[in-house]
Image (cartoon, rainbow, N blue to C red; front, side, top):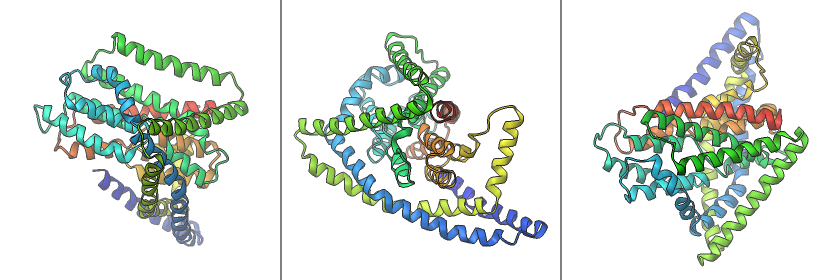
Length: 413
């Protein structure tokens, strides 16, 4: 499903751009529009390759660090810490069933940004949940809760986004770390509450109240604390805290590896090799989406779309500074690569350190690719009827988008 959707979107980029350009040529006498569209295909493909090439070193660094953490048992520790909470979010799973461990491992790997480890763990968890499912073609409650926890995108370390910001010349690539952490928290919280309401899971118990209440208190304290600072100091403190946290994570992973008697150097090298492979693998995808977006923008269609939304929002008396980042938010539930292309395009067009550039990055990090995850995970076990999974996933996405806008105004507005 997501592949077909992206296929139609990519085709629409070219066809709509061609129609608009033809209208501008015939009726407005704009002889520059087609040369601009062709120039954009060359410049966009060059940009895509340069970005992918530039990602290699930083991806190798972070995937190497993550491999040390994985070998050092950090994922297992997170799984044990999350155990009391997930037992109550999945009441239909028999106590002590092996699927519980797979779910914990998948969520913990996602939180650490270990995509390569998280997907196989997620597919394994889905297979085990299907074994417990009495209606093999219909999603069960635990399946839907598991999917929403994935699609809400709770991530502690948004590695790829910081890498892209560094490649696009951001002065402080980590300045979106705290905003993404806050936005993804609200997305996940909304997903849990909405799905629990659908499934009539009571969150009024000691464990959930302490966990969710404690997390909300911490987030509220963070927002209040930053709210006491002016924008310049807020940016400095946020960036400093983010860098301290990231460096602490790196040192913590190395110490965890040493404690487990892991050869941390070899583990780093193994993970770093994946960084090179990943950077090469994304080149064709990034070229495809950036060329499509480049043609769409060069034809003037993107400006027409954004101006239309901006006029509508302005007519309602609302601020419109965030509208330029909206394409990233709209694309994210459909395609991760498409949203990544929109994010890169926003940073290229407006600047990596512009409000729109930063907001696009926070949009990218605050939710996950809902339809892609639904298709891959449900498709792997033959689920045809998804029940309320799509509604819960999209509502969680909406909460993340709204939170991202509010938080970016607070930090960067």
